[in-house]
Image (cartoon, rainbow, N blue to C red):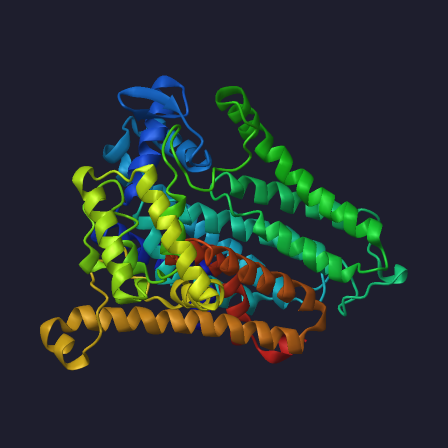
Length: 483
């Protein structure tokens, strides 16, 4: 039995069954799904990276080209487009996610090794593979045409060369001397590979360069004051890798849209479309829960919005609620936010920030961080997510309540295991401290970035799960094996 569970095929088979269950039982889509499919269809049929706006094929840059390129490949292979090709898309995503499990296992083995010359840690590899294969949160997203599967895959891939580069710097106390410098250019070459891989990942999710910023900061600590040139050359190598991959996309945007845009625009707006900056600024003064997104931001310019659906924390006074009701009454007449209405929301936002700056800049971002990390992650399942009141929910819908609690506990398990693994590895393997700092800093920076968004979607933190699982596997590795 031990040999069966140590065999990678057993873990991959279990992972395949879990992913097929989600794909066959709970296939899903989102607003972004239709957007990606439209871009890919126009790209394939009209050879233009574009959307159909007002009946016209309009070039856009509001999404990175990686996922639409994947869809085009599937469309060519299946001879189908759009919703008709979704089965092929989801099955391909299962394959990519299983490859991600192998990458996570490799990352865990790198973390557990005492030196680059030592043999790979087989137990860490096996434990990480099982944790990744049976993770319901990453497996769940194989059942929806979105970028999460590829974002996790490329993030895990990029982590491997960056971890290798950090491990090649011998001194673990963050103060490198000349005698501890690695072989000439070995770190830079590995960092270049990390930059290239992260660059490809950026073609799927524009926030992927956060990974390189985290690595650059840790390299800065390693080379601090001792070898500024090595730190600079390593940072330039990572930046060069990302630049080389993203340059064709920036060149396309320059030639087609008149601007050398390396990433997707922050607000993902169509040409000529109003960016509701005032509305979003007002949302940031009260919104932190996922369910609130369904009440306001995801209805904007599509559905009527009722002031009674908005949580009471969005209003400091009855007069403020009345003011919002007046603005929404005007908006509901044509379901289009006008510049004047957006300015009114901006004024409300400024007033709320002036009254409670700590709420806006500290407490609400902290609440968003808790939301994206500790949500039950059931948004793709036909489950309401309601647990309380306990007795009433147990009587009305016990399955709904049990599934919600189960996913919440599983999420706690994975997050807690990752934190425990990071602390354990830091104490037991000094050579791994720089990479623990790198992975922890990456997750912290990404979380901080996500708290600045007005819609705290839990799926955006799934790209941290490769690092989280690889660290968590260290808990299940014998202590003698990581010394």
